[in-house]
Length: 440
Image 1 (cartoon, rainbow, N blue to C red):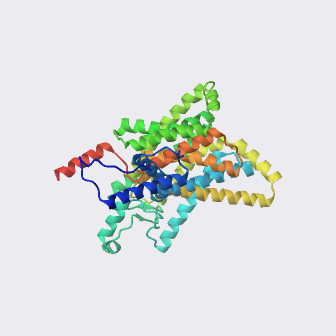
Image 2 (image 1 turned 90 degrees about the vertical axis):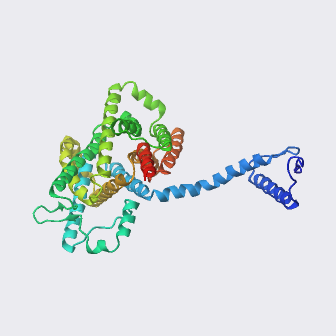
Image 3 (image 1 turned 30 degrees about the horizontal axis):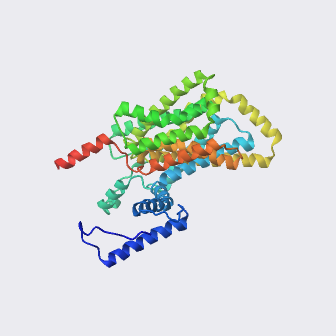
């Protein structure tokens, strides 16, 4: 290692202790790089301290990656639960198809809606009988609401007015400390949002084309474009970068490039139809997110599910009737070939699927209140990627090298987006807040 020299004309020479410290640091960096086998040192080759510092910083960042991922997952625990329950519900639906040949998707959704309504109705009965205020949420919806409630103190316990009261005439009446006109508007909002959310469920099931599945990955891009046109809302650059990375990775992962291109040429009508569907889905996502984050933010998700399930089931009836022939064929073959034990197993799997769907609706309503629409769109895309990955292990479906490449690219986009997922970065609103702070 070259000795350290100094120009004594320009500056004062350092003390002997400083020279010793510098030599020790250089030796430590040299030994660390040599032990990690990151570079090979030749006999007559020397490395400057700047190069050693750059390599050392790079190695430190590599070591911090697992801890950073752990922090991101902990800070987005609600999204992790939402992803887990969604994947569990989808895997249960896929197991019904694989193990029992139950291919009636609309009928399955109808059964899940019935089970969700029964659970929410049962909760209302328990709430009325035992005078339960409200089930505690597993995860707090908003940190600011928690801080405000702590500042109010014990007066909330004495002067607490329940948000929801149950009347004997019509089972449930919403009391949100507004006047009767506001209650009527909130009931109408429940019906409207139920219709919008049900359309989001019906359309992908009614148009099951591979090109539609491929183009659904572009939903975050269309959501951002349409939201900017309608609301003039913009986000931080990191969210845009993560969205583009995730869309590219999802397209590579979900479909083979050659397969998708070959299907695009002969099915141009399906491609146009998918563009229309995706634009409509994006509009419904924008509308539903705006409703959940404003007007429905004070309403219990269980109450929303209680309205949502029967209305959605009524809208789904025409599609269930269209599956009547396939459903009759399934019942006949199931009764002739399956035993009584298989029937019990099928009913148990169907009930578990309905319970998973109930919690999926519940956490989805909570997540829409907390996270911005771009994060939710990215999470929906990542759900499709993770579903194919898990199903490959459960049902032994092959995954190609391009699928793995798309998985790693989409995972990078997810992690980048979740770094700023707690706050909705609106540049226009942020500048307005800065101006108001300066005036104060």
